[in-house]
Image (cartoon, rainbow, N blue to C red; front, side):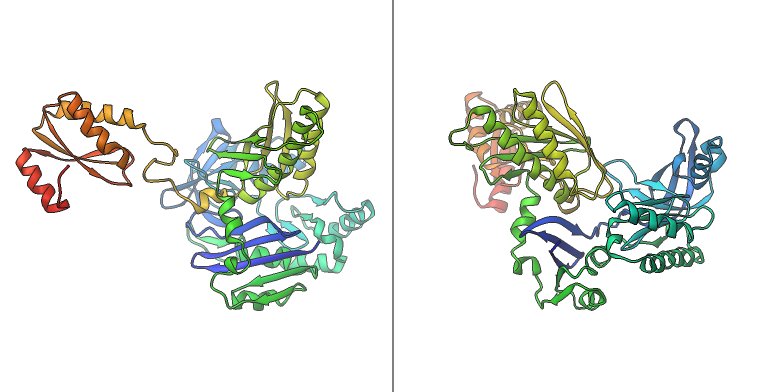
Length: 480
């Protein structure tokens, strides 16, 4: 498939847009927040072993701790494959043990990262796993090819080693697979030869540059654009067409800024005029489908609703991928009466999700007409990575109503019992505060200062009226 990849270098690293059929289908972006990122291999130390949880907590660095379940230990994996008794977590690890762990799922909210000791190293055609103990071949490949690759890989594997052969291997010969396998094994052995300190990152290949190089630079149907001269030189080693642009803002050059900004918004307008409202929370993501002004000429209401829902299903699959949304996802499609219409919408959603390389599962529709699905969460959602909570509303998107704010202020002024108070408030409150103070005959003289960034109000100063007047004139040059 023809793709254009636009990779821009910026102060925090790189970000890239993957363009198919003239539209962005996926964003890749470096996480410069300094957290533990998916794929990182870290030298950790066991801080606690919890038998009741079948898990251990791994100290990484500073105050950071990761979670390691017993099934993520190589000896547990070995016992499972050999159908032996599964060892308890207390038999596998003790507090103070030094362990090499890989980030399986990045930290989210108050939860630390999920870790594994079943390490993996990704290449273009395959994934090398030192402790997997099996060979898996993509089901998307022809059965004869799968059998050939499986037989060939069996001759490379030693002891506990495992390998996953990707769909991309369809264009490779067995010699290319073998060369990559031994290269990845050498990378693992080189890593083991190091003597890292606790908390040190010993391996990380998840940067945007590396992902673009690994997944897109070797396909002749791909075109790579970048403003990073060094990255362009690296990409030249592949088979894709590479273009270097001396532009500081490459996203602006390719008119991707608008698409990027749209990805960070909650509201998505569909081509038909229908819309999606996407609400991301720590527990789950809720998506509401609205028909808006969409109308189908000559179609009955049920047919129109099914058409809107099917269009929304396709775009929802795209939005999940663009926004890197994972975990539990609830979709509120427009109500449908016919059972065949409901099934058609679910099937459309499932077909659209097949384009997603991340594991997804549609669990069906509830009696209330809500579609439940899950998408594996491994990286921070784009919104969490690229935005932060509003200092005014605290990230809720709402502030107290004007009447509620004024009532609370009058109560606070009354309790203070001062001769005069100076209040800073948002612009639409100032006149209301003065009117309320006069109407209720508040004995305290209330002075107001307007501040657009103030979520509600705050009392800046209390005291004698003449002292406050003098202070206000010095600071603001006027009184209200």
